[in-house]
Every structure is written in C-alpha cells, then in structure tokens.
Amino acid sequence: MGEKILMKGNEAIGEAAIKAGCRHFFGYPITPQNELPEYMARRLPEVGGAMVQAESEIAAINMVYGAAGAGVRVMTSSSSPGISLKQEGISYIAGAELPCVIVNMVRGGPGLGGIQPAQGDYWQATRGGGHGDYRVLVLAPAGIQEMVDVVQDAFDLADKYRNPVMILGDGMMGQMMEPVMFRDEAVTKLPEKDWATTGTRHHPGRRNVINSLYLQPDRLEEHNDHLQRKYAEIEANEVRYEEVDVEGAELVVAAYGTTARIVRSAMEAAKQAGLRVGLIRPITLWPFPVEPFERAAEHAKAFLSVEMSAGQMVEDVRLAVNGKKSVHFYGRTGGMVPTPEAVLAKFKEILGGEA
Amino acid sequence: MTHEMILAGFGGQGVMLMGQMLAYAGMIEGKHVSWLPSYGPEMRGGTANCAVVVSDQPVGSPLITRPSIVVAMNLPSLDKFEGSIKPGGLLIYNNSLIASKPERDDITILPVPANEIANELGSDRIANMVVLGALLGTTPMVETQSILAALRHALPPHRHNLLPLNEQAIKRGQELAKQ
Image (tube, rainbow over all chains, first blue to last red; front, side, top):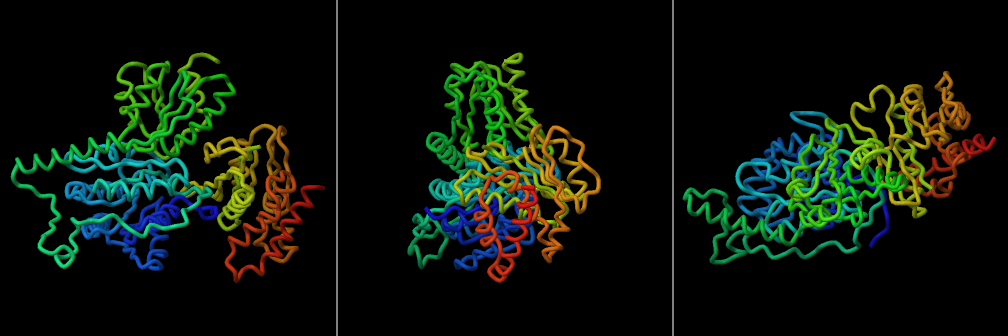
C-alpha cells in the first residue's frame, strides 16, 4: 500500500478507476459530481487515456457503449437527472452484455430537484432503470476508502459478467474528504475479451457482433433466459454487506452509504442509553443481501430502514424479512440529511419508552 | 477524544482550507478524520462552512449538527451556528468583523481580532491561520508541526515562501488563546 492521502470522494473514484486500468471516460457536467470528470480530464492524458466531455448525457453513455464494445475499461458519471437521461443507453449496454462502470452521485429529486445529497434513485438503480428485464450490479460505499475499493471491484465484476456496474453514492460521498490509500501496483493485465469488436485482424475468421436487437420473439426469449441465468449467478455469488452488532440486537437497522454513517453515530448514542441496536449495511444494493436479514429475523424484535428517500430500500427489507417481524421506516427527502439525534429518537420510539 | 467542528465564514476567508489543514494534520498523526464542505445554495448569504471531525475513533457521521467547536469568521456564521454548539463547547469568533457579542453563557467563548492581527503581520489573507492558531491554543488536537506539514502539502511549491508567514500567524493565534 502507498501512503495515506486526504481526498474528495469524486477525485478518489477517478484515481481508483485509473489504477483499475480505466483509460476512457465520457461525461457531461452536473453537480455534485463535477470533480470526477474534472479529475479525469486532467489525469487521463497523463496515462495515455482520454476524457471526452460529450454534448449531452445521452451522447456520453453511447460513447461508453462504443468503447465498451471495443473491449476497453470505460467509465461515465453523472447525478440523478443525468442518470435518467442515460437510461436508454444503459438498457442497450445491458442487452448487448457489455462491461462498463457508471457512477451516480445522487441528488434530491424528482425532476431537476436540488443538488444536495439524496438516495431517491434506489429503485431506479436496483430495478435496472431503463426498459426491459435487466439488472445492473449496484455498489454503495459508505466512506472514501471503501469507494476506492469498490471501484476496482466494479471494473472486475463488469468484466466478469459482461454487465454494467453502478456505483451509487450521493452528494455527500462525492464532496467529503477522508484519508485513502491506493494499492501500489496498478492493474496492467486486463481479462481476455474475445467478444470485443476489435477487427478481424485480431480475431481472424470470426465476426464479432454487438447487438441488442432480436426481432424473432423466440430468439429474444432465449436471450432473456440467458440474461436471467446470469443474474441468478450474480445473486448467488456477489452479495456484499457489513454487519455491526447484529447478534443479540433487538432492533436491526438497514442503511447504506451516507445514511449508514449517520446510523453508526446514532448507534453509539443508543449503546450508551442501553439500547441493543444492530446494523446491516448492504454494500451491494443489487444483488440485495437477503440472507443476513433472514438470520436477524430469528432474534430481532423489529427492523428499521433509514434512508434519504421517501422509502425505497425498505421494500427490499420487507421482502427479505418476509412478514416475520415488523419493518419500520425513517427518511428525509429533498437533500435533507437525517440527523443522528432524529435517528436515535426513532430507535427509542420503536423499542418503546425511555429505555 | 472526538472533536466535531464547524468552521464558517464568507467565501474567500479560507474556512475550507482551515478545515482541510486540520483534517490533514490529524491524518498525519494517525487520527481518524473527515472533512465535509457545504456546497450550492447553503453557502449563499455568507455561511460557507465545512464540518471537520478529528478523533481517536472511526468517524461516524461526517455531518455535524451538534458541534463541540464552532469557528465563526463573520456575523452570518455566528448567527447561524452559535445555537448549535454543545453545552460546554467552544466558540471562536472573529471580532475584527463581528461587532455584536455572542449570547450563550454555557460555552467557552474566545474573540479573536483575526483580521487586525493578520494585517499587523502584513497580509489580510492569513486571518484564517490566526484563528486556526487560536483554536489549537485552546484545544491542542493536533501539533503545530503537523499543520505546517499539511500546509506544505497544500501550497504549490512556488507559494512555499508564504510558509513562515503562516507559521507566524498560527503562533500569534496560539499566544492570544493562552492569555
């Protein structure tokens, strides 16, 4: 490992992507993620790569589509309204089974909304987001070091499954600074991509075709069956989460990203007040970590999902708990961030009385 | 020990840099740190601010709603954050620019004539370092040497001639705090 440096989340993602072998970045400006394309514009030419500021988000995602088809490691980033614009392209990339990494530094919505942190894009991210039956893997880091770590993971997962991977942060994760360490050795050898459209000079006698159009329904159903088998494999193998004090907890909280950090502060205060509160922090939002919730439902009295949304992940928590225990919700919207005090008050309300 | 701070002022008064230097110095000393800036409309009206945590423990919420320390470089920042300080906490305010007096009687209050001292030293632009010195003089959460190392990292090489001036400003702030 190298030395510790203090870095903004947005910039840390950029450097981590370069360390992971990403040499192509296509973007369009939007707050609160601008430091990432800015960083790539400065750094990529130094390592023989290229950053293009496209004329729109739609253009940027289609440039990603093209670069991914050529087999290179490619990234784009945006924030909520810009990610909505990219959804057509993301659906095409998922349909054509190409690897890429998409960063969403979520801001308050709907519409143009605001520019402060939010988590209202959970449904969009975890349900595909565009048209058709598809999924993208979604990674939600809760600190700047973890952000660096998941970027490497994101590129590897994208290549392994030939599938888009989304990193879901929020304005706070993008803007804040924390110490980070990068691995000393950068990735030099990328996985073999014999499907890439690099010209028959590179794959003699075989035409590589990238396509998401299947006019014959039976062929398209076959393709969908194949995709679903792949998604089942991802659900079986790629779930990531963190558990804190879940064993023996009366109340088990679900929170990801920024919100999980706030819940951790509330849990410290809860411990001093004699409350037994645990946390399940999904790191992959899709595939969702169902199993730890099933386990916790055996002993916990109740569950609580804390989000910067009107209640989105809480639906996945309910599906996982499957009616065994009550599932509560606390959230703020519009760029308002829950305070540890308010979260603690919710703990007390659920566990009853003054505890 | 966990220090949860909000540093606030007009854009250009150097509160963001002051916060970054604290976080950087803490990191150099192996402490857990975070730095979170305000951005967008939150900064309009003269309350650009950053939340900084320096702690022996891993940092939970980087967003601070009940700070143990507030630094107010101008009046809008004093108005906005005075009420949020934890009882027993510390308020440092720049009385070169703030004529009115804080109202709280359950916290430690330190007025620092930051711009006056900075001008005496020859540059209005180091008022933030005077206040940083006063903060370290009251609450020595990191060593002055670590702050100077952080500054050396933050300033581009052609600005390193300003390091002695910054060091002087920090010292003046520390002396003032000890009086």
